[in-house]
Length: 193
Image (cartoon, rainbow, N blue to C red):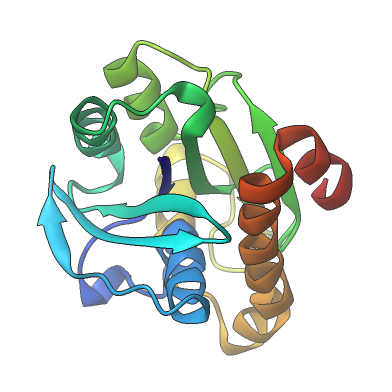
């Protein structure tokens, strides 16, 4: 079984936030493959299906971002998921908006949700799909890149123009997941990085 996790914060007030791009990407993926979010388990909303012969469990942790590891570790243990079979989708400040990077392993890069998963799994060896949201620019109302302004930025909604700009990248994430399932990590990295 492949466990595919999108990171974000639960609740309607966060739904369009930059920090919720993991949820946004998985919502698109589930619509594309007609998978329903029909269970609540291990502190997550989940949906399961079979894609091209691959059994997948999709999950959106409901723990809030900084405690994502609580949910992910419970799902990994419950379903005996190997690290090679865990894919986590999350936002990345250090990539330009809409840019996608796939890799396995590495540190958290300062991302609290990824840090929580690494800590709770005692492993860095899972696959990540990083989705660029960029950093705030001077004049956007965030002024400096201190911690409070970064928090305000990631918890702010994509503008209508940004939502239009990132649509193709959301579709690419869905395609990248399918490639990971069918062709493996190296092929997905070669195509989508």
